[in-house]
Image (cartoon, rainbow, N blue to C red; front, side, top):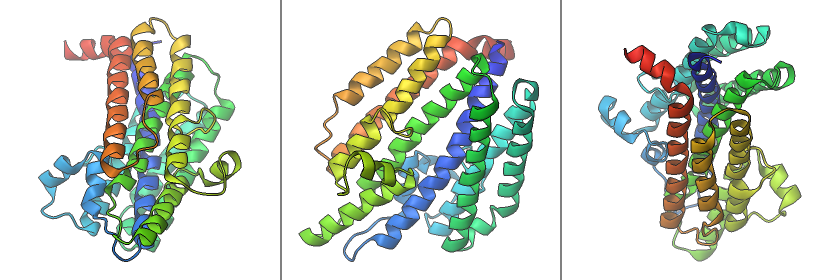
Length: 316
């Protein structure tokens, strides 16, 4: 397979996953704000820091208020991680290699782009409209993935799609979990326990994990158990462990996989060695930062191994 096509497939999948998970990220944070008890606090600017976009935001906006942050995360194409920019990127990548994918994929991705283009502004005009529009993004993106999984041969092209999707999903799952580290809990112990339970329940709901958690872990929502489930459960498709397993499976099908595979296994070892009982805000944030750094290094290794020839040709 041409490295250019492989890179486009990889990034198409990443962009689509990023758009869906940014929508989940925003909806989860909105729900956190609605459920916070008296004495707890959370600022919208923290959302930017958790997403790693605070420096870029400061270049374009004077203050960190909800309306501007929503505009930045949903429709501002100066932010390459915004929902509109991500879906636009996926559309452009798909347009260049339509012959590699099932015929209907282009139509669905184009329809998703038209939907968010026409509704992105409405998503910044109130929380109820925002929730509706973002849920529309999530549902339409899931229909794209369902079609890919149900109608595409699991050849090399499919493996690069899975690589991009799994890497982006693992990273975004850690960021959604990381929202909890940014909430200042009330001083009252009982109120803090209630707030903690609501936060972790919102995290499960943001990742569509609540029902599976109840089935496979228990009915009581407890921080360490939720953290362990979302990071280490090998069967839940949005857990970091499951995503790393998917990545290893994809790499094993490709050639010259040793370098990225070594980094993936290093990420595994770090994940398995984490202290999942200490969920103080500082510890939680630090541990998730380390996982995100490993995932970033894994992306760099995949890019060097499989896309470098195309990138070098472009530079010449």
